[in-house]
Image (tube, rainbow, N blue to C red):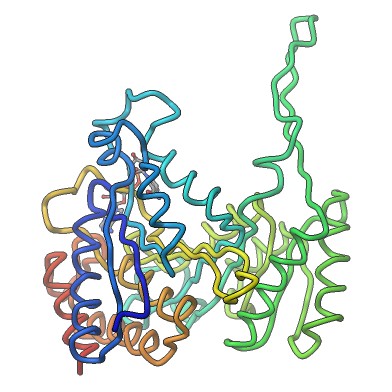
Length: 367
Ligand code: NAD
């Protein structure tokens, strides 16, 4: 009997091509490992707009809210550039994040040994890298009010954004970081700008207090966010879990991601608060890349970011740690063998299609 519900939203462009490879893995796990996944599928982004005139329909939104986890492909493309702002493809993703209250964004930066030479940094700096950035996703300067441009009446205008954080927002994001650290190398580095920002002072106080009250077994350090950016490119292996706010997290996670190479390799997860009754968190897993309209429909997209996002889903939504480890190891094995999609192709390697890459990873996973 199915016990684990997944709602698939492949979206636009290369989203459906990448999702097809995950579907093969789910089918295998159900058939050979009695994993008990039940799947349903909906429309999001431009494809939802074409069908319903909305970036995600209410019915699909209900299904996303009810599922144990949502797997999301990508949205957008030139076809929908001119649609009204409220129903643009990205509005579907924003609604999912908002309605599911996904306040914690997890972006791992892992360097697969076979790709250590393709980073812009020296091989010894990134070889074996495995860090996790936990970014606060629903608060801070992107949402704080007032947020406006006012006319000062003297030929000048003033642009205002407000950085604002309440205690509970900092507590819950730091708790996620500490909990995740316990499943890894047990270290958290918190980054803010307490030297120049009041929200940074509060951030530092609340993280410290949360650590003392509930997570004193985890090693905690603090770093100013600008110094953190520098350290990320100087010696990223010094970090295990980094926790930071929405604005700094946006930048630091992009820096960390690019340490390891192509967009086609980068997974992410967004988590909500644990349900009071079941303890389960709402969760959405998605590759970092977009819909890549330039290569969509050609069967050449790299499915690894999508597959690695599913591995995160196994780990964080279903506590299937052994299966997640095996799937990530399967990706490493296939890269070791020299199989590459176009975006990560290098001399002496074998160029493969989306489906060939997916099949090879499944074969390696199945052992
Ligand atoms: P993109 O990530 O779609 O593509 C950037 C470049 O990386 C392109 O050259 C693309 O071919 C390549 N690329 C990306 N993913 C790849 C993969 N898996 N395999 C091989 N190559 C890959 O970003 P963009 O071009 O700026 O945006 C295209 C569309 O995607 C836009 O409509 C944008 O709004 C949307 N977008 C959506 C999301 C999302 O759904 N979360 C994120 C970013 C952009």
